[in-house]
View 1: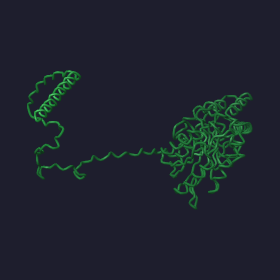
View 2: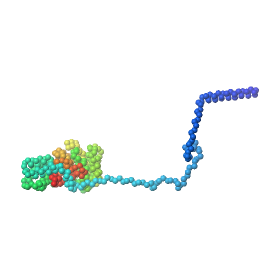
View 3: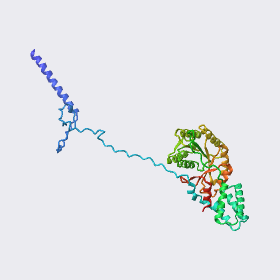
View 4: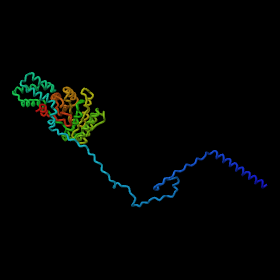
Length: 407
């Protein structure tokens, strides 16, 4: 019996061995043949040992010895006290311009009236110097005055006075004729009118308010800027009000004029209410203790009723702070009789206190000074004689006539 059990065990072991060989053979057939390993490249010999890149499992490796520095060897970061900071260069504010003094400015600008001299002053002298003053000559004198926009009534008045004076004078030397013509032209323009600008601060501390009005294209904003220079030259502290909100460049232009002489400009949004800007300008002038507030209004056609009514509104709103001291009407001397029509309409809307005649250097129509004064009963207070910053001058009748007649 024992032999039988031993034989069975041996048989089972033999069967298991044969099965294991078969399975192993099948697995060897299924697996692809293993590619031979490529030979490793020869490692170049380093001149000096370099630290190896960290490898997997290196955390468990024994720590390397790091160099230890003493407290004296440790370099501390620079502090604010040790850092040398270069001082920033101070940005210098642009130097303010110093306008020319107004006293005698018209005398310095007399050469700008050279074009008017040829037709009015020198033309009259040439005619009066003829040996025989017949009716044709007097008609030429009258025509010269009319072309110069003196006006019909003032022309007839001047011709009659010249006729009488020449007969009484008898001899007519050039010096005598010049003195005669000078005297009569000054009389025609008038010397009794008050031509000074009311720009001084009131006794109660309120600044004087000057309103500048006129049609489009007469150089109104430029004139406002030049007038600001005139006031600064006379020692006034000026605040400019850019109430022309309809023309995009008007406020920028006026502000540029102000910055050149140190005058502050109050402005509002484009297309905003002009009356609101004018009101704020006067309010700012009171707060800054200014001497004069100069308000540039929008140019408007004298034929547009709505725009003219708005100008009246601007004046009424400004008067909530106090009365307006000056309303200056800017006229283009080259427009002649059309300028008189404009003047009449503006005078109906606001009380004009003075006339500013611009572009008088490029015209032979210097007689407009006489005509506009006769039309409105308002004196010419300022004249523009060029495009320069200081080419706006207070009007002085005697100096003006001197420039017209020449030496």
